[in-house]
Length: 356
Image (cartoon, rainbow, N blue to C red; front, side, top):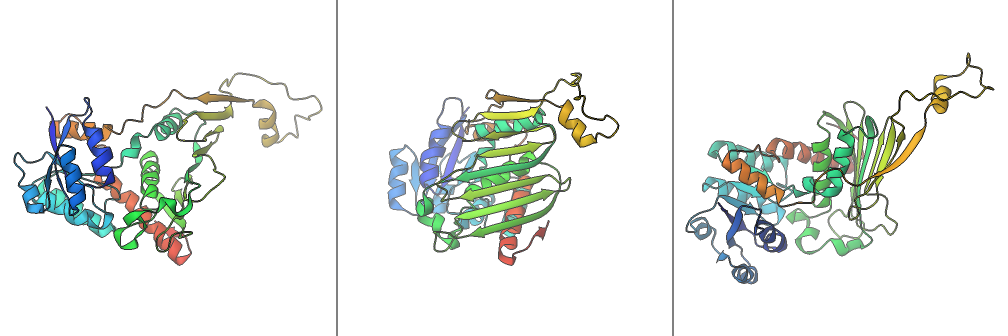
């Protein structure tokens, strides 16, 4: 059985990635109709075999209806279009970021609960191979208990990354609401414990009105710190991931070549190493003793974590509609991440750490 997908806003992501993702043989969805205000995009929708509408009511009245409506408009229209679709009787997945404010997001959640319609957000990068490998390595205890996680996306292209409406503030442009929302969603999904504080620098470097540089530091209740950075102009890139634990550290240089390099204390707890004779055992400190009794090993991990399959978003929704799976991208998780984003903007504007 193929579920029917309707698309509001047939832009680059919807007309390219989403249509291709659901037309795979292993994804039980079929795109059937699109609504847009741009005649050129409607013509392209027809080329791709979809019915095309320039009137939203006509779109909602499409013969046969939809099992899911994707909202792929610019960010400032997500709330309005998602709520209208749910009110019209359809399940909804919004592109990220879910909304412009947490108040808008709450309205979307409230509409979902009132209408009984599914609401989720396209946080497809939870399935990225680089993230899944880091997540699996942490959960497997490769470096013990983590105390610092660094996540970065960097580009040498400067303002080349800020294009079309993504460079416009009133449309919700900027890197924190673009790449940043993916990276923060990954961190918040990985670390379930309560957040203590958020500190951030968010500013335009090359852009005229939106941020193209952002650094967000999240401190969790246990003391674990997560550091997220999006840089649109960085001629010398730092690693995509760095994770420090109490028994070692691991790094991944590039998401395009996801190999996790680990340096950690050897796991052979029974190995005995003689302390050199010139050391007085009575006065040796605990820190000095650790230096002598612990040996390190280096290894590469390249076969953990599945990931890389963005069609998994639609597969999960199909399972939810069939009653066989639990929704993976939950609205409450989306809200938590959005609260972090709002705290980051507040921290950057006021120049101080925000208690969460």
